[in-house]
Image 1 (cartoon, rainbow, N blue to C red):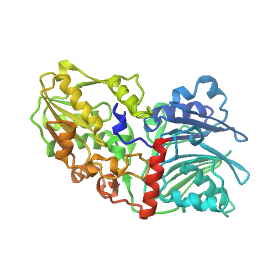
Image 2 (tube, rainbow, N blue to C red; image 1 turned 135 degrees about the vertical axis):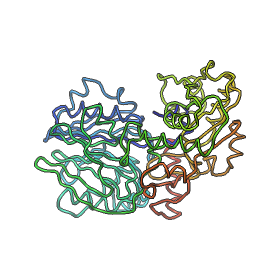
Image 3 (tube, rainbow, N blue to C red; image 1 turned 180 degrees about the horizontal axis):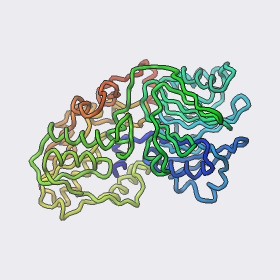
Image 4 (spheres, rainbow, N blue to C red; image 1 turned 45 degrees about the horizontal axis):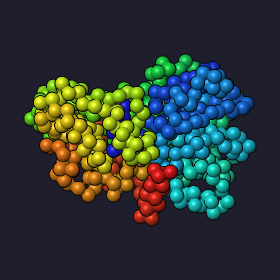
Length: 473
């Protein structure tokens, strides 16, 4: 669902999937991860339990390339958790692929994590000073060490002890040989759902993963809630409470439009963003086109509200991988030219409104405008279905540093001139929040710098260093 100009986009977080009590656990987890592929493309992994032993396989790349039928047949057991990764903290390498498997207090444990911890640098330093040895550079291994060092007797109490030390975003699945635990941070940054498939219990980042295996969504895991699934019962309790801070970018860009996230099908707010954008920034134009695919729904909303016909004016080559995965900038630029092309008989001689979901650096918006003019567009009016991104995210979305975010140092008019559009309009923060339920429960830090989980300037500096290192590795 991502734009083909992804190096100018926030990188997605991760996708987690788990199932307890189904004989085809590995295959169903594979299908669930396939449905969640948009949340991470760097690595994929599945760990299963046959109630006595763990079986696992992890690899770099897309789900379909990491697993085949022969590999899945070796992943025995009726309990499984899986993970798709895009690195928001820690480098992109096999050592950081998840689920993470460790021996803790004589028990094999697997952990799959979506999110990012703002106190990770502090926790890691404290653990290393106490003799902890880290194999990976991801936040997830910190959680494993905290569980291992807890003085609590029962495993679920060890997990709670660890969770209470974490600050930031985490939707977690933790598996032992005979137990599965699902936890969501008290602020609720990232989504996590619980569902049923017959007698089996299923967890997933988004409900689209339930649809593909014909599971029934039951409810969202609540912020600050821990759910424990054992052979005999399902236990749940609230381990912490904070003011909710749901990530608004799940609606703008990250989640699939057919998923239920934060209590609503994503298609609804995403379309309303486009409609509100049309009210705030109308244009005298002939057609509205999206930057496929993440802006499709917002562009439909813009068209619906403005009365300007909707068209697909840019063709996306579906057989080219995401451009931001390419390690070298010049390679990415070449891939962009392969991946997107104007449809000349749609845009030629037309005044075009092009709708995108966000602008980060602005480099690819500039290429889009040039591409449309080469395709014969008479005018290009650029519209963005989110406010200007001025601040980086430290809660699980790998946005560029503030210095790299064009809106942090340029006015809208300066950005318009840079990308070469005839006009440029962003959705306002107030307009965006008017399109969602319970607007005071959303995090808008990437737009206004109001970070809901506080951290010191020293921690902020360290986080920025870690994020930059992660992108360079």
